[in-house]
Length: 175
Image (tube, rainbow, N blue to C red; front, side, top):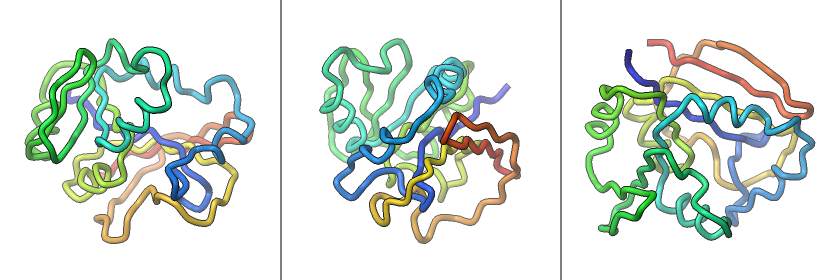
């Protein structure tokens, strides 16, 4: 069975994943329910992908241990970096790397974030599922979930759920 590359992310109603200053303050003001489905999703993945700016943001925010300990974690970067105990830095062809991961045994692969990284995955048609949790907030500007010029993708709604004020939209990519 092939592994799926899944984008599991929160977005404002107007399509932003973070404010211009990379703040998520708007997201934490919304009343959710439990962990808004995070634990359930987290159990379905064993590999995590993110861009370098997302990684740097997480490291800056986390005061304890690395939040994705126990999962294979790859950080895509344009510069050469020394691997750490928790992270392998990747500076190679995205398509080959992802296809290689997908062909290995394991659970699903989670794209945590990085707008540029996500854009590359969409352009190369590597994404298999989108699970987007929409917050009832309009922030007006910031870092968009999708970029102008992203490839057109046909999606099929798999399920919707709500977690108090949040709505989760789960889409499969039509192939």
